[in-house]
Length: 366
Image (cartoon, rainbow, N blue to C red; front, side, top):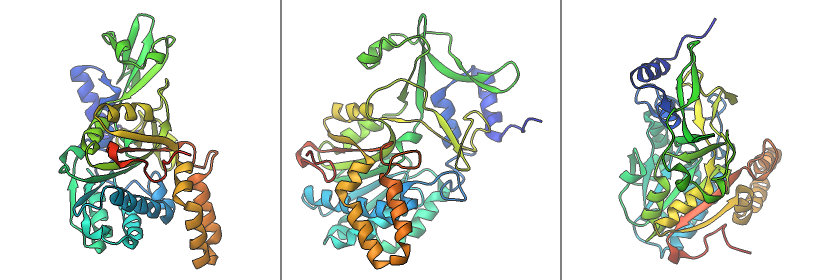
C-alpha cells in the first residue's frame, strides 16, 4: 500500500496541475524552504536524532580552527573596530560557539564583532540564540546574505552552498532541455524533460563541456550567491566556504536526498528529507572573480585543516583529557581522512577575499 502524499506533495501536485511540470530548481526550493512545509522551516535536522551530522557536531576542533582563522583574517584586514561576522546556515550555532570561544585569545577581536546569522528556520534561530548569547555580542538574523549590512565582513559557510537549488539540463539529439518534475501516468512524481529546447544554452556552458554526448546532465546553481559574495568582499573582507563537490566543472546528476542518516528518493515525501547537490567550486570562483574579488583555492578540507594545525590541536586536547584520546583521534580522522567515512577529500574549502589581503591562512602556496 502506497504512503499517503505529504502535505507538500499535495501542494506540488496542485502547482503541476496548474502550470505543468516544474523545473528541478523550483522543486528543490519548495522542498527545502516552503513557508509552511519546507524541510528547513520546522525542524532541527542535525545530530543522531535528525537526518545528518555536520563537521562542527563531530568535534569542537572544526569550529575552533575556523575561529582562529577568522581572528587572523581580521588582523590582516587591519583589525577594524567594527567587523561583521556572518555565518550562512549556522545550524545549531555549534560552529560559531566553538569559533568565538577559541578566538578569545586574540586581543580586541571580540569587542569588534557584530554577529549576523543568515537563517530561515525559526526553530534553529532559537537554538542559535540560546547557544550564542553567552558571548554578549550584538546578534542579528537575516533571511538572505543580501539583507546583511555592508562593511568590513568575514563570512563563514559550512555545508550551505550544497543546499541551494540547482537547475539541471539534459543533452538531447536536438539540443539541451531542462529537467523537470511531473506526475507519471501511474500517479507518482517523476523526473522528465521539458519539450522545448533551452535557447543558446551551449554558449553559457563551460567551453570544454559543450561537446557532451546525448544523455549528459549539466547542473548549475539557481542563485547569485557567488556574485553577491564577490561584490560584498571585493573591497574589505573575506569568506571561508567549506562544502562537498567538485573542484572543476563537470557533468552528472548529483541531486540527492538524505533522511535518517541514509540516502533516500528525492521524489518521495517532499519536505521530509534534506535535498542537496554537489558544489561546482570552479563556477563559484568564476562568479566571485567576475565581481572583482580574489579567490584562494579550492583545497581539500584535509589540506586546509592540516595547515591550520588540527594535529597540534588534537594533541593538546588528548593531553588535557587522556581518557578521550580515542574519541579525539576518531573525530580528527573523520575530518581529514579519505574513504567512505572520511571528509578530507570530498569536502573542499575555498576563500573569497579583497585582493589586497594577500595569502589567507590555510591557503598559502608551498
